[in-house]
Image 1 (cartoon, one colour):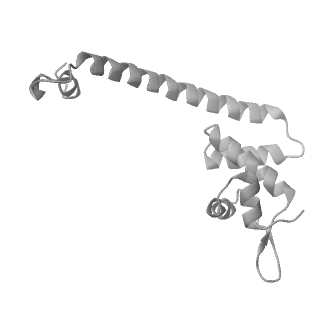
Image 2 (cartoon, rainbow, N blue to C red):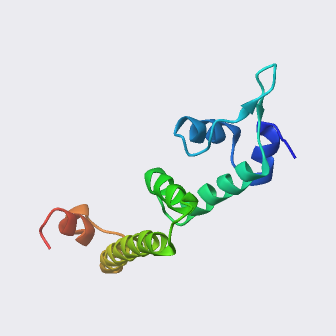
Image 3 (cartoon, rainbow, N blue to C red):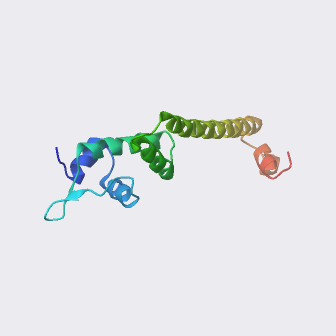
Length: 133
C-alpha cells in the first residue's frame, strides 16, 4: 500500500526531516510523486528505512550504510562482503569499548583518590590533569 511521508515516519519511527535527509543523501530512492507533488512510499521504502535505522543503532555511518545497501542489493552478491563489513564495524566498536574502559578506569582512580574537600592545590584530579601526578 502506498503511504505518504508522515505514514512512513510513523511506521518506521524515523522523523520526517530525517527521511528527507536520507533521500538527499541517496540512501532512499526518490519517491514517486502525486500530481500535486506529494511523496508516495511503498513497502520497500519501509524495509529500507528500517535497515538504515537498525544499522545506525549498531554504529554504522551513513557512508557505511550506503555501502551495505549496495552490497545487499547486488543480485549476484555473496554474504562474505556483508560479513566483512560487519566484522570491521565490530572490531571498531571493540577498540572504542577498550578505550572507554581505560577512560572509565582512569576516572574512577582519580575520583577515588580525591577526598572531595580541602584546598584545590591539593586536589589529585587537578594534579593528574596538570601532569603533576
